[in-house]
Length: 252
Image: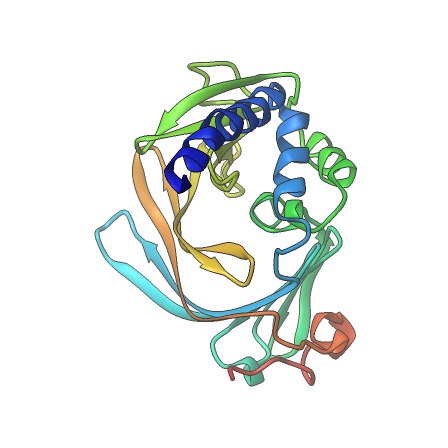
């Protein structure tokens, strides 16, 4: 009886899965599906320790320890070295501020697409994400499917075979962001290939414990996360530029 009941559910489950897959036929429907899959469960805050490795052209490497805190949507704090030293960056609602020894050294508008597509998309209205992505120059009328590292993915922002246009790749099964192509900040003529890897389940959502940045076929930067904590309590002051030097989060 149990076997018969289980078998009877297979066509229903297959039809449900197929229907959901068929619904994703455009870039905008993809962003909505990503939101809808996790909107009720994805964590709201996140902290972790990051090993940041820069791979230089001469074969040497530079390793730094960064401490990062997120509050979704659209808030990210990066402390380079001990937070009390006051060195790092603050991103909040499309604004960027850089700090050295607790003093502001630069600021201006900046949208971090890794934050938008790897985190914000699951916690903010899909209309907001669509607006942000369009505003950053992604052509959401372009959409196709690919295979990436053995897994089927959706590709938004480019036609098949185009690896020069701004675009993002999303794993079909779990609807997780896995790849981004965008111009390098240091040289807009060069395209960066940024990848989210080593996804791990976390508090009703997921986190990619490794990020890689490739340029011209070479690995130029990587991030490896440890001490990952979901939903820690973070005071509003942590993301306040005026209180950056005096209100920082600490590792638990």
